[in-house]
Image 1 (cartoon, rainbow, N blue to C red):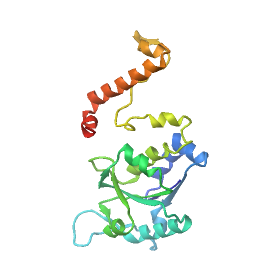
Image 2 (cartoon, rainbow, N blue to C red):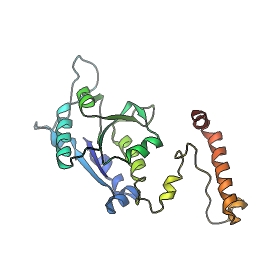
Image 3 (cartoon, rainbow, N blue to C red):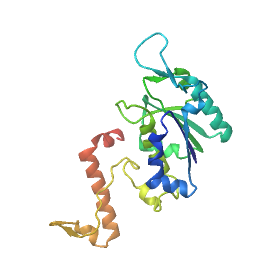
Image 4 (cartoon, rainbow, N blue to C red):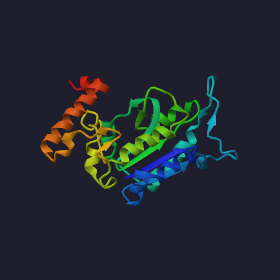
Length: 229
């Protein structure tokens, strides 16, 4: 998979891409992540990426030309028929695990990161295939939301996580929250590990985990159960 991030603030995204799972996926050659500075695609001496809105109003609007030029360059470097162009926006569909499972099947993901008041609508209409939101709130720009989606997708690429079964059993993969986890020591400050996990009886442990996942979901996210019944 190749992932391209187009942003006027490249330093906002570079550091997280060099840590943990995202770094591992790149080092293994399983994903290529390329960051593009939007200002490199301007042609004025001030490298301006925004301007005042037509019709008046508050705030600055990001100009269309740099985004179109960036897309042209990216698509010429990596021609793909299986590509998604994603714009992170409060207007988009709220991101969920099923969407991550779908996005990981694509060959290329291009993230166009907005900033300021908004982006010229021609970018959305002509370039973007999917608008995605990470929740009903507003952030300064699309960089952090893009990283959220990228992290959720990259960890699903087979081989990125050593134990792929770990990702396959995460919360939301089966419309339930994850069951509780415990590790050593067996007892700490008077708090012990549930005895069933020490029994060695794998079938009973599996049944306990399913019961606990259902219980946690019922207690913390009852809406997930209601959504599927």
